[in-house]
Image (cartoon, rainbow, N blue to C red; front, side, top):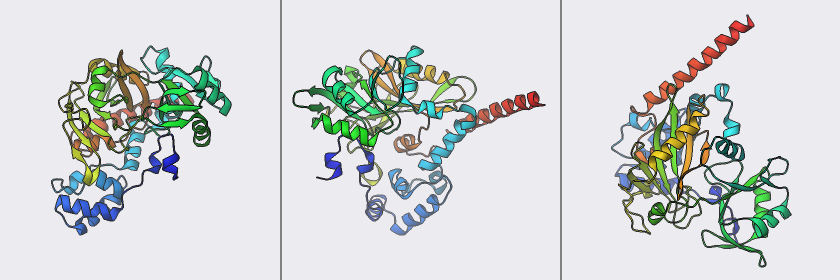
Length: 392
């Protein structure tokens, strides 16, 4: 069997990218443009400091004839997005990137401040002390926890990481048989799961109670938790929502990571919570859809429940760290209200660009980002000025 067939934990690295030659053919046919022009644009846009890679060029459909070359330059690739985030939340100012990338630490902080978040049942870690949280030091401890004490359903994920890499959702365990039933229908060996966690994530892995999704959301999107991605910024003093996307999990997936086949992504009005459009897939194969392919329920025009509470949740959480100019948040719309799943200190521009068809550095968003950056520079200058006065 191949590695992809035996893998238990979600792993984007096993997804084989399409050949560039095939993407060129599909884009040329659908966009009714010549392959030579596509190659010229890929080179031109990829050579820019914040430019897009060849696959990002196709993911964002930059071969579209309705986009001018100046509009295409407004798109950022992964590295360009990272450099932008370093300006929006400069390390010399925030010094919080490591903390916010630690899911144990920031989850504990949200709980301390009374922000609705996930419940951690246990953590595999070789060396950390975690107070009242149960610590699993080795393989046997992981097995004992899962077969004797875990409360299901349970969601597992690495202590650090993103894009649902290494995640798993377990519905139930048959301890005598040594097997677990996953949310995607598979039956797997608990021993194999423990071995994979130890091999792939030796620095730490956490098990959290799975969030029970709001029943109205499940009617549309299925049982897998489909989170809203909020991106918030601070232009002056108070956080505000820059944009929001709804990540609708693939019917066959355990999480809402958009890289899995069949996953969907929607643009949501940040004020009202009404879904404005929905896309399934990327690049030449992307489809604009209005109804869910399995449930048949209408997605476009749907009003996500508890929207104002979800908005306030992320605004309150961002206000804990006002020196961070920009943060990303995954929020689950739970049965008892919105739940903060995790924080992303480096929210990429990918979701915005895929669902809007516009580059993040467009004429509407860029002025906002420029004001965030200017605010950060002023704070840094003021701090340096005070330090200089003290030193002299």
